[in-house]
Length: 157
Image 1 (cartoon, one colour):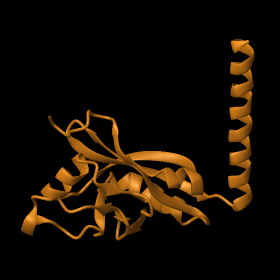
Image 2 (image 1 turned 90 degrees about the horizontal axis):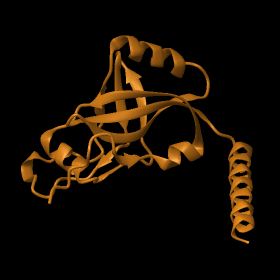
Image 3 (image 1 turned 90 degrees about the vertical axis):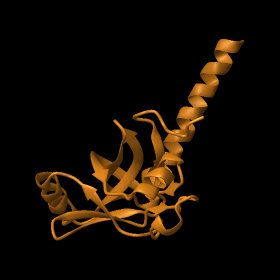
Image 4 (image 1 turned 120 degrees about the vertical axis):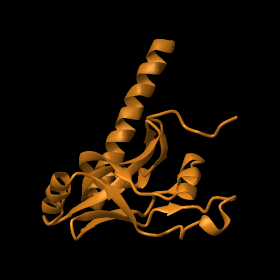
């Protein structure tokens, strides 16, 4: 049995990003990986929890993405927390660079998935949530849950 994921299904998602940030725009980009890292990603052995992106010398880099070493990789394994380059068009990188210079905007990896056999990263231009924003979102979610529960109870009577 193969551990490969079908195209488009996320291998990993950054659920914390949606909790801590408002996602304003999303972009798809490739990621520069070595062979053993690709095999680990296919097995779903990566963590996006505290990862972020920055732009240095016209290149977009992802920091804090943990890809566990591949078990059969021996000497070919790389550092799990190394900085990895994302692959985007120069025009898109320049646009993102302009957005991140505005106060409060960050580029956060949202998910990793395979598309036509290639690893892709969905990144989002995000603005940080304040504590009262998080409370507001939680209250809306609870209210929606109560509405659905009451509708289900009424239809079941």
